[in-house]
Amino acid sequence: MKLYLDENLSPKYRHAFDSERMQLFTYQFMGWQGKKNGELLRLLSIHGFRGVITSDQSMYSNNQLSQHRLHFFLIHSASDTSSARMPLMDSLNDYLLKSYEKFDSATSSRVVVTDGVVDKNMSEGIHVLYFGE
Image (cartoon, rainbow, N blue to C red; front, side, top):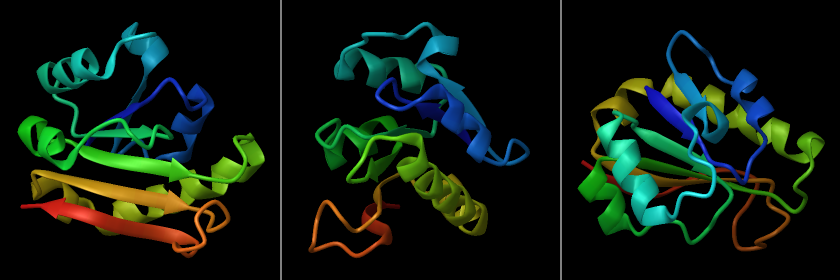
């Protein structure tokens, strides 16, 4: 699965993912710094990406995700430090490895990976909020 690591997250998080099952590209590698969401969606589709990992909560709607066949993985933590976010990246990697076929065949999804601190309505862990098949 080809994934894009958005520019609001550190490029070093790409090392948290299994490189045999997932290809992770950063905004730096792709040269997409400063791209607006609409243009970024178009570029992701053109270049065959299946998902975007970001901390931007308002990045895309479910309709846009379905239209572009993308999975949206929101990293939601109280702190934006590496020590706070790395465990969330590790959890997402483990989850995707276990659910790889499901995500690979689905049209789109919206998934929140959270430390459970920011939003008291959402416990720590991975929450699938939308799944388009």
